[in-house]
Image 1 (cartoon, one colour):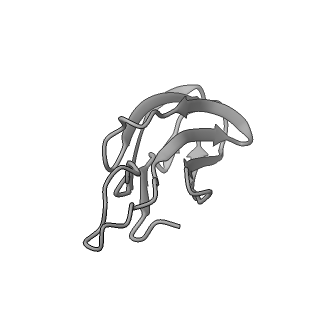
Image 2: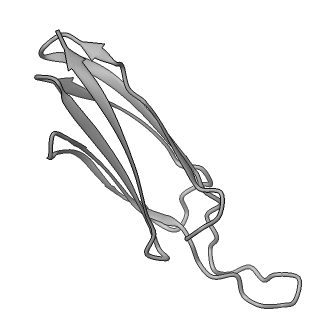
Length: 109
């Protein structure tokens, strides 16, 4: 697991039924390419976020495959329609097998 990884998500706490909301996500991650060497000349293992998903109440909203050229601290902003109250689950997958998850709730009035 990479050190210092911190997912951050901004989702409105409430919305009207059928409203389109804007979701912003950022994950603090160094993104090692596997091509650099440390001070002793050893290769630093590759560690990049290679996939990002967002689900609402178990239904896929977005599924993004990321390539090695992705920047450090990947940021995503997207819109989603909220039909009812529920939970968004955001998941980031790392090359080293680590999985980072964050959940946010939305209340529909």
